[in-house]
Image (tube, rainbow, N blue to C red; front, side, top):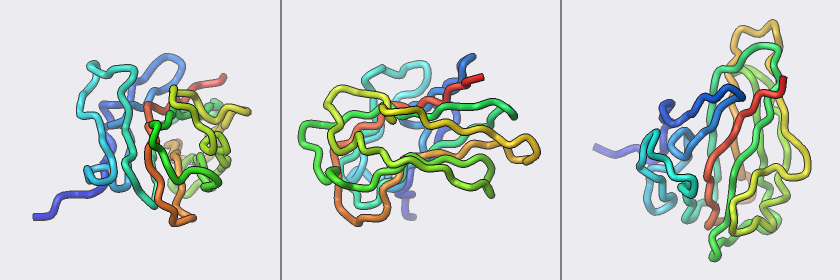
Length: 173
């Protein structure tokens, strides 16, 4: 019997706060995330999370780290990721890394290229850094689920050394 190579999100690893949601490493769907040749995923569970804990990319040519959560209608949300690099990171310079999000399975993606990953520091920072990435559910659509993630699936370049600490989906109003 073959094991699954992709990590499926654990909804218990999403921390609901008054101001939104915090996605810890196990809250993500990660392509190749269950294969230890490509990712190191922390195995702890809520409430045992350590602030420094991260899903650590060893190497992949297809980066896809995604999450989803149901949103309140007519409320704007800001999406950001807390990321860092290991000292031995590679393959990121010039790579087209995108933060993408949509509301509803049939929604239209909104996207932003994350140029910060050309020079991401070793200490964790929130990205995007230049301006916020916001999305708002449309009132008249029935599916108010937010689908979002980090993607680099176009270049075919191998890359490694990225640490994904968490993602934050914050209510703005």
